[in-house]
Image (tube, rainbow, N blue to C red; front, side, top):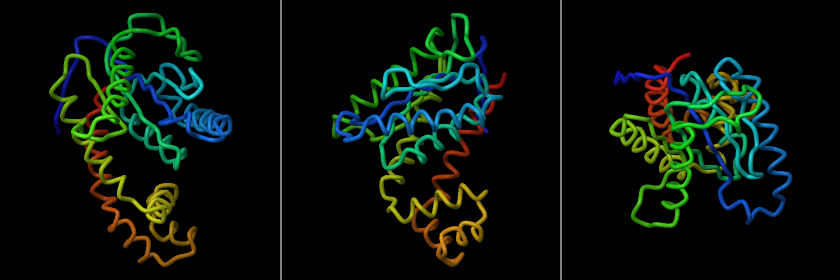
Amino acid sequence: MLSFSFNFKPYIAVIGDIVASKKISDRRAVQEKLGAVLSGINKKYSGDLASRFMLTLGDEFQGLLEAGGHALAIVDKIEREMHPVMMRFGIGVGRITTAIDRHFPLGADGPAYYYARKMIDELKTAEKRNKEAKQNIKIAIEEHAALSELLNTIFALCTALKARWTGRQREVINAYLDYREIQSDAAQKLGIHQSSVQRALANANFYTYQKALLVVSEILSEIKE
């Protein structure tokens, strides 16, 4: 497995926002749902947090992790819970140069947040251009530009896979993940045969997608408290 190291204490800053939020008819309801999803993230992943996730600018949120093993699980959970509302995520790995308040992320600052903000801005710019890779997750790791580029290539390919998923495939994938990746339990939840679950996952190239994210997660898991 590809490894990397730092000569400083790294943190993982995550900034996310809603794509084309001004076009959503009921923005308030979507914001309330996002707030509830973030509350669930804060409870489930409390042990990974340096500062909890919270809404900051209405359609935007941020949080700070001190361990990277669950960073993509958190992003994936938010994205799946908010679908069909489209989300984008900027991830910055680097130093935090200010004091950190576990309950209020807005006061913290440093390269980790600079990079996360830069990634969000680059995603917004890329969405307007035809010749750039389309992705909704982008990462920058302080002092590791080549690794960042490699991971972003993986994210772009994963976005291409997700873009081809049908509504039914997404429903099966969500059930499969929510029921501990047990096909028979997902099938029972959906009222279909296990073979139908397997076929939907295969046709969606889900296992390829899952493997790609697992590789990224294993790399980020080297960032620990």
